[in-house]
Length: 93
Image (cartoon, rainbow, N blue to C red; front, top):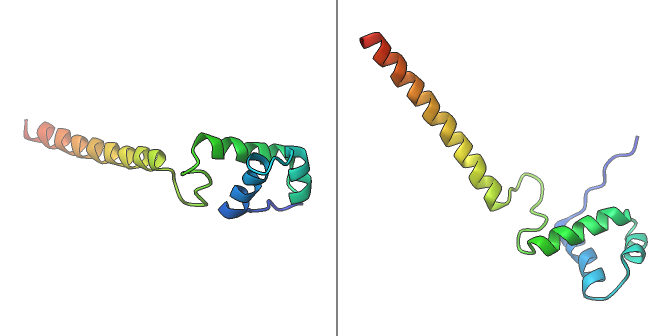
């Protein structure tokens, strides 16, 4: 069984630069870097969509996803507090 290869943010950015800035064809760059052409195309799309936030790394969320995660936790906490208050009100009624 093959294990998935992990590439650093710097490697991905340099691979994208090969194609975008130096004019190397995607197919040639993929062969030279020993990555699948589709993987390199995906890296190019990600870098083009949001250059500053591209390839955040494992365990690091983009700011929008971190905010969504924070809001989900807050909603869960508020629901729990609401349920506690409902139960208290029902017992006092």
